[in-house]
Every structure is written in C-alpha cells, then in structure tokens.
Amino acid sequence: MPKKAKHPVRTTEKSLEIVSELNRTGETRVTTLANELEMGKSTVHNHLTTLEDHGYVIKDAETKTYRLSLKFLDIGGQIRSEIDVYKVAEPKIEELAETSGELVHLVVEEDGKGVYLCRAKGERAVELDTYVGCRHHMHSTAFGKAILSHLPTERVDEVIDQHGLPEVTPRTITSRSELFEELERTRERGFAVDDEERLEGLRCIAAPIRFDSDVIGAISVSGPTARIDDDWESNEFVEQLCRVANVIELNKYNV
Image (cartoon, rainbow, N blue to C red; front, side, top):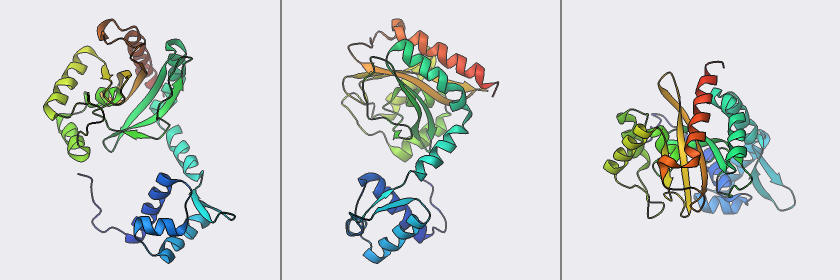
C-alpha cells in the first residue's frame, strides 16, 4: 500500500488534488473544479490564485478558465536531464528507432509503475497513447516485466500489493503466480514480451538495463502484431534490442 504521511498538511493535499484534477480535465472553471472535488468555490479559488501567483497555473482572462502551466514541463525536463541512464540512452533510443523503424521507449520504475523517460519513432512506427512522463502498470507491459524480473521478490510483491494486477486486455496476466512464472522466463531468455497484454493488436519486446547488478530501467520496441513476430527466439528485433541495452550499460560506467 502507498505510504501515508504521519501528519499530512491538508492545505497542501487540497492544492495537489486541484493540480491532479486540472491535469485530468485540462482547462476548467472554478465552479466545475469545486463540484468535482467537493470543495467550496472560495477555497478552490484561493488555491488557484496562489498557484497562479507562483506560475504553476494559467488563467484565461477571456474564458475565466484555469489550466496547468508549462512550469511543470520545466521541472520535469530538468529532473529528466539529471538522470544518468537518460543521458546515456537517449541517443541510442533514437538510433534503435531509426534502424528498427518502430516505436522505441526508455522507461524507469518509480513508485511501482513504469515512467516513460524517452520515446523515438521510426518511419513505420504506430502512434500510441504514450508520452514522456506518462505512467503505466508494470505487469501488463514488456518494459515492466523486464524491470520486475530483476527486482527482489519482496519488492515485486510490494508493487503488486500497491497497484494490483488489473486486467487491461483479455491477455493480461492477472495472477500473482503466473506473473512470477513469466518473470522467471524473462530472466532466463534475457528479454521480456508483451503479447497484446496492454493493447490489442500490439506486441512489444523489452530488455532490462542493469548497472552493478541493479536494474535501472528498460528499453522496448513496440509494433503491430503483423510486424512483430511472436516466435520470440528468432524475432528480428531481439538481437538489436539486447545489443543496444548492453551498449547503454557499458556507457553508463563513463557517466
């Protein structure tokens, strides 16, 4: 379960609830926010104007609506630029997308979910619902299973306890024992697969990135089932993917 603050600051919690709702809905009015969050209009307005004063929220004077500002992008971009695996992997992700022609991602784990740090599109790449900073469950993705397969059993159990094993498609693994069996197969062959487990019609292959025996992320190649063969051992992308992961691991020593 998520950790709870011993002495939560309710004012801060309210501001974060407002930020989360603005992120979900986009531009919206004070009244709409107040109704959705079951807060008083004056309370919501006070929080919004404070966030606006500090540059985190923008108010449209014409429509009287509020939205999140690009200051969040500034913060996120700065955080990402300081992550060593991103510095090393970003050019390799671009190269892999070009050679494979497909969609390539770099993902790390945070708070039990996979966070996309980088994406690159090859000339044949399909457009997916992914973007830098978005988060997905680990059990239903190749990158997630690549990472989970090199985490201690206790940590994997914690992730399952926190986020569950929700069914995303009819092929999603929803059993704890089945997931552990899949993680064992992943360790044995050195890469993970997603066979229409997150999106129907899409397959994905992922390789873990390790440093000093710790898993620090994963890279993946995604494409339609018509182009990514489920004969995994002879799949044309596996060798490319594992080679790039190995280069990233070696270059990590020079950062």
